[in-house]
Length: 162
Image (cartoon, rainbow, N blue to C red):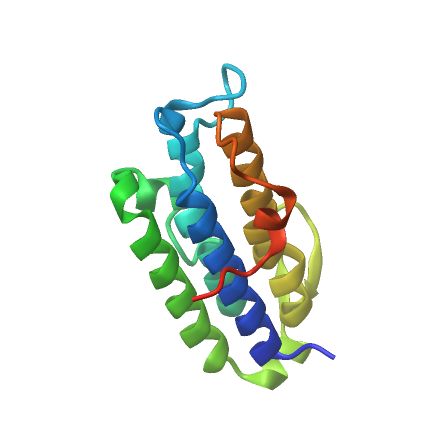
């Protein structure tokens, strides 16, 4: 059964993993780009700091246009602000999910621009939460490719101790 509390805990854990990964940034890593046309590391960090949150707010509103595009919102974010933006994103998601109507999550629907419709609760996990975990994986892979030689597989999934 879907639980907003479990999604909040999982979201916060993913946030801390992303922050820990960012802490492994090698010198020059922010400019890493796998191939021309793909995001560079800085673009990835900017998207990661807003995109998943935008998905949550859009699903809860039932409106794909409820927020500006993530890259527009984060276009000027310096790398030094990534940790603060990730924590703010987690706080905003926690607040939004904590105040969401459980009946709306169960029975309300979200119609996505690509034609798919599902319950809001399912949509929260299927899209914004998956985006957060998927981009966390991309961050890990970018870091490895950019020269973060101390990264190991557990860094991808282990929740850092505080």
